[in-house]
Amino acid sequence: MLMVFFIFLICTLAVAAVGYAKSKNGNKSTADGYFLAGRGLSSIVIATSMLLACLSTEQISGQAGIAFMSNMSGAVCWEVGCIIGIIAMALFFAPRYLKRGVATMPEFLGKSYDKQTQTLVSILLMASYVATAIPTVLYSGAIVFNGIFDVSGLLNISDFAAIALICAAIGIIGLIYTVFGGLRMIAFTDTAYGVLLLLGCVSVPFFALYHLGNGSLGEGLNTLMASVPHEKLSAISPVDASAPEFPWPTIFLGVATMWFYYWCTSQMIIQKTFAAKSLKEAQKGILTCAAFKLAGPLYLGGCGILAYALFTGTETFDKIVNSNGDLAYTMLIQNVIPKPILGIVCAAIFGAVLSSFNGAVNATSTLFSLDVYKQYLKPEATDQQVVRVGHIFGFVLAAVAVCIAPFIMFASGGLYNLMLDLTGFINAPILAAVVFAMIFKNCPPIAVKVVIPFHVVMYALLMYIIKVPIHSNYTIGIMFWIDVLVMFIIMKMKPREKFQVEEDNVVDVTPWKHAKLMAGVLCCCVVAYYIVFSPLVLAR
Image (tube, rainbow, N blue to C red; front, side, top):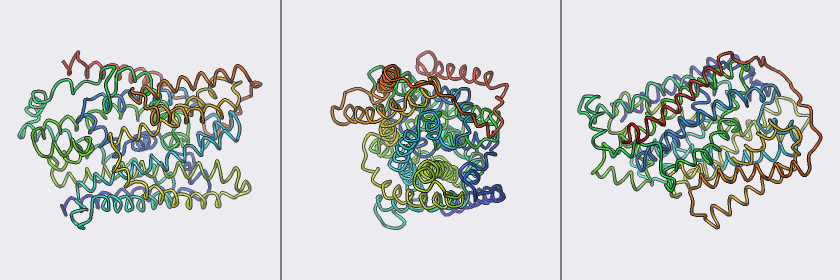
């Protein structure tokens, strides 16, 4: 295990050196330089940063766990189905964001509605990131590294204490990146970690098949198909399926709502788009990220299926089941990856954790510094003061998240499903507000101010008090359309005068000429994926 740790450390330090070397010449003393990398990111940096911002250990462990416990519905819908949301970001949302020259998504709403709307949404997003996104990233990373390096055993402490210690370590390292490097360093280290991801995590299924086939990939594939019930290879679950499966109608309801929320409105993911040097580079980067997502089900959900085949009938199988599947990925890599490669895999996983953590911290600091501090607390603040406040706020929120993270251990139902359920408090009304701002010119600010508290109360009632006996993704999807109806009724009852959209083209907004062609090809790939992972082909 010492060799694994040494290789992991070398890879991690090498990536940090690359990120520092690439970012040291950037101007981090201004708000644009610190929070938006000087609006100079290229397509490949945007692609890898967006990919890793939403690919952390809660996705790696969570999607492998869902596949282990049920089938491929989670992996395919979150990795391939989400391409529809990414395409919408490239073709519809990104051009409108960049034409407004905004630094945050709430700023876009502020220009479309009013400053109070901007502040309300900023506070909601900050609360969501601090209470759910950042702690989940820390906790999921901690359980993986505790499983690999056995921190609790080495230090003779409880699992809870070990997880708390690892969360604190990840938080400190992440803050060094975020506070001293800004978005520019985060983006460049994401690119380097993207290479490690390809070398490390993508290799896991191949080693697992090699192990399953006693030295033969072909025999491993044959053994897999013979030992795993074929229904586990289906991406299409029944209408009445319960968590962790995803009933197929929810693809058009709650799942679709979350696709568009995450990829079109979530600040921690789309902030890299705001930092693009041009719309052309943004669209190329966004669609390249979508292409990378096509491999996701194979090295995420596929690992859960391989773990099921390898561990059936063993004590390890029972241990994974008792963890709601969250330990499937950790147990798999411990048993099938050669020690030198395991160090690279650990570095890739650590990079995914850092990327999501850094992205969330940077996004939250950006929201507070630009949408709250600069707008209300000190409008006359200089750029240096705004950046310094971003540093301080980053420290505070990271400390809060580190304190919350270990207690996720006591949640039931699986880590990934927990995160999705909690995000349901804000995703639908925020998405509805952004869509209305882009489509309608006479939607009044009061519509947003009514629909957000209405949604929060109704969602809490349905999910946690009344406990409606349907899948949570049905609830989220139905609530989205109710939110849309509420906003539409208010707009018709109290329309405002059509406002003129103020465009501030801080970068070139000429679209990429191949964007629609690539989007069409990606849509065909999504359809093909669902056909292959269905009773028509693999799940027969």
